[in-house]
Image 1: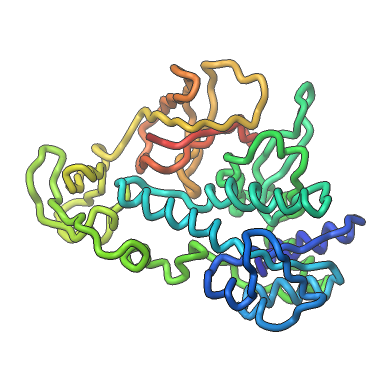
Image 2: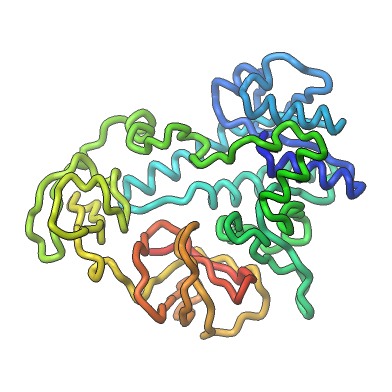
Length: 360
């Protein structure tokens, strides 16, 4: 329970279905954890049924706790500050390596369907449920459910779930996956859920001001990563203050102006160069990925699919090959713009998520 509408409504829906629901809130900040006097990653656990002061002072934690109290379900705040440090390290390491990280995918892999599941097992839970807009359905001939897009196409979050361990699919519930967001808000209002009209969060949870550059400076200190802005022929166009401030496909904030749109087409951390090009030079027909995770059983390569290369990307038709056991090659029918090393490529058969990997 994050304190938002989706997880709050999930808890209500599960309770209405007759489940015994336990609410869990992940505390990410060291200062917050110290105020809670939690000394380890998972235990001791503080329940708001017995401990009302200090632990849930943050607004989201307070919202989650109040929803749990209103639903009369047990609620625990868990100290995940050490685990969140792993996410922050990954985020900083990727940018400083010239790649574009996706902390939401890693949070789902390491925390929500990692350490939270570990805690669920400790308390004897049968399932772990989240407020993600995705659906699980039985698939004939397969031993576990298939993961499908949420019914609300504008809110679908299946992309960030591709890294879930396949053996957990039988242990997960997505209560809001069959709802449109507007329907869910109406339902939450009717149920008297206090977060029914709470705005959706748009930022990375540990960067609330959305200033990645400031976060990297504060977290890792000043970095000697300044260098040249060049075109695809190697001509020097200007200088930049640090390649970690750029990502593939970026058009604004380049520090130089042109008569036509220019984009970041490549980042070279070894030379500190940021390469700019036109839209045609940004386009890519192929990509390769590794660290693969497959949620569908019995896939036979090669095959046709649609591929999504970032969260808001329109899925594109493609041909999928597996030249090596942990090496995926995707060839698009048409060039795609903004293929960024470090992001995930996720493959679908219509609305079903088959699996994916990390673009190299």
